[in-house]
Image 1 (cartoon, rainbow, N blue to C red):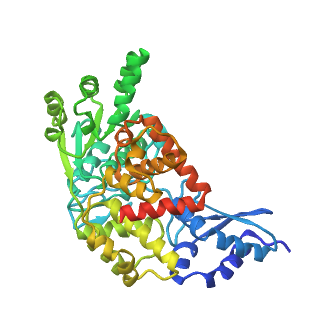
Image 2 (cartoon, rainbow, N blue to C red):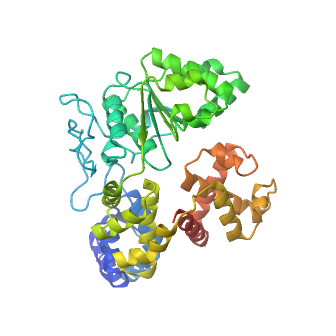
Image 3 (tube, rainbow, N blue to C red):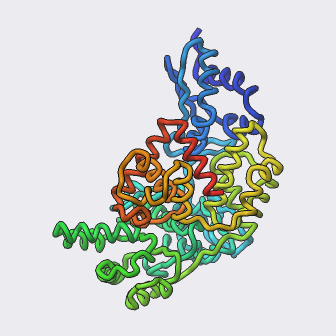
Length: 478
């Protein structure tokens, strides 16, 4: 008698469990659900996109081998995260409801559907929707569906910025226009910017939202000048309701771009359209930024995000584990938080490295394992990660020279490591494509995009190559 999907998956799990550590089984497989079964394929639901990719990458071969023994024939097992669902451990996925009114500032905490940022709008104001409607972005990049207010951890380091963003999302162009957020890499500036876009679109899907980097604005301007489309350029940028522009510090020293952005800013502000900007430093400290732009950037509210304190770092790690349905003890989270101090990306990278180490050694995640996997790296790291450091490490890994990576030569022995280095810079440094191109002899952004896409494709189809790149990424992020 042919098995149902539920029966088949139950048998696969039963036979696979002895080959996995209990920690691995509980963290990754216990809460999966079968979706469909065909002659040669069993589709299984995972709690998140991250979990689906992780299970397929780390345990896919084992599960497929077990399934072949269960069915008596080869059968593929595919994991997916059904669209529109958010993983929870013991409940069915539900759409996120609106966030209630803000309350007094409290100790750092993870925001949930029933908690709002301290210091926000006054009680009695309309609730802020937190759902995602990223498909309505007028132009530029799409909003990241994970970057919503209910996924943002509020602490003493970002309280004012989070409250200001909620106020802007509730009443665009009324309170803080422009809103200027600055701080170091990986602290949550882009997350908050996307959250504003999601919240505004969730309340009114007809709003025209544009999320771009200053690099994209510059490239659009150059292309429009070359192609004689300046009228269309100005219409597109000046008829939107919300402009989200990342990394405005890269406008420095670009006279023509600053000139055009000055007029775009004025047109939007005069029309009472909301402008939100991020930077790695306050307006007055941006080299080569015209005084008239400095003045306008300070018209609204300038607020900063600092590195998180210990309590906030623990909350961030707990939220990450909950979102990706990963079971980690508080003792382990506290150990990581104490030794990983700089930014959110470093915290998340530490979790990924720890889970990879646990999977490879088939040992449960404990504080002792965390010390073994992360202790020396996290406590001893003093060197700041830079493009130069990435180039040097990749060159050494592939046995080529840094000068070769920068050169115009296109031999395979140089092209592959060059593409890998570009990919790692984009993943680890959060710098614009144009800056990555400059690090490789002034290559343009389209070349960088091609290189990144090529590495991503090769990682998907070549396990050995993927493992090599992942090892480099873990080492550099460590």
